[in-house]
Image (cartoon, rainbow, N blue to C red; front, side):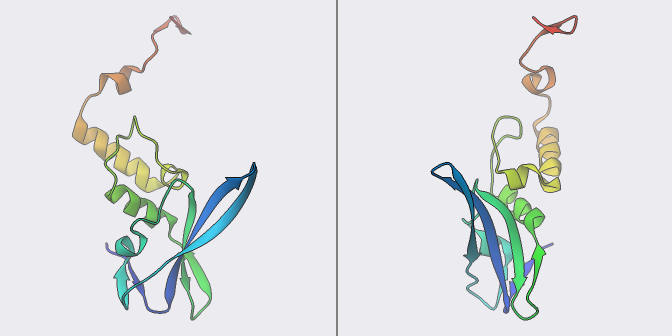
Length: 128
């Protein structure tokens, strides 16, 4: 299902950064170019490792909806990484969309000895 951002709505992207060992939060806004734009187009290039939450803000009612799960789906649609080797941002790793995506990728790629057996050998419950 394609989600659209309409006139009167804006997307706020909450990010966490550290500067001089002090954490702080910042908000960015996705600029919507058309009257009705898909969520994928609106978020293109705006999601990164510092992203924590994505909100769809309705300027008429002053209410926000958390669309972080949908943003994780948008991130995964354009990502060509390996579920067992590559890191994803925290907001993606904690989503249900990531779990489903990883399962689908593992089914498509088939058996992987490293994933199945791991990198450690165990003998009688201890690492050999």
